[in-house]
Length: 192
Image (tube, rainbow, N blue to C red; front, side):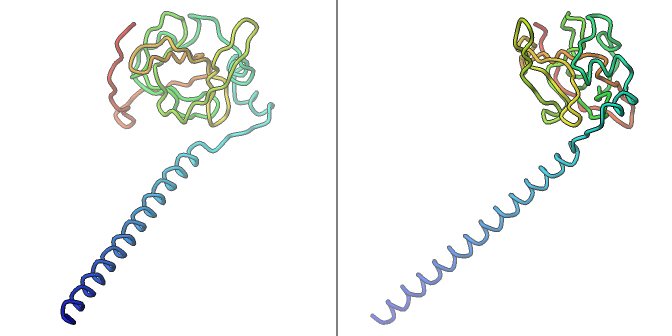
């Protein structure tokens, strides 16, 4: 009887120690996963540190047309911008702070006269604001680093997103793809 009781106690002790060890391992792995997530978030925030400049400095950096569009929420006339019909491969950056915004791989012919994309390079690089105009409410698209006006986003784009980021050429700076800065290949959306 004593031998049986001793075996049961030993089994219970082994089970308890195994459960404690498993719990410690689980907590430790959870801790490392949270730490890795925090490290990734910090890296994203570092790349998107806000750029705030006085109005006079923006005027020195930007051309009058760029300033009107980017800092004063202007819109260039359709079919007049530098990039509305650009077919070269590369990345479109914010003209004010150089943040990568859109890729030629997601650019498509929308027929609107402005460069149109179905998604940004990284969702966190562009922000959205409600734009209440005289006759309608639209969704304004801004650079998330410098708050520069880019254009508007609409829900009439092609697959896979169904979005049309309608962007002013004056708010963009194009960098042609070279061997050293290749952009990742993405599936082309079906035209509407």
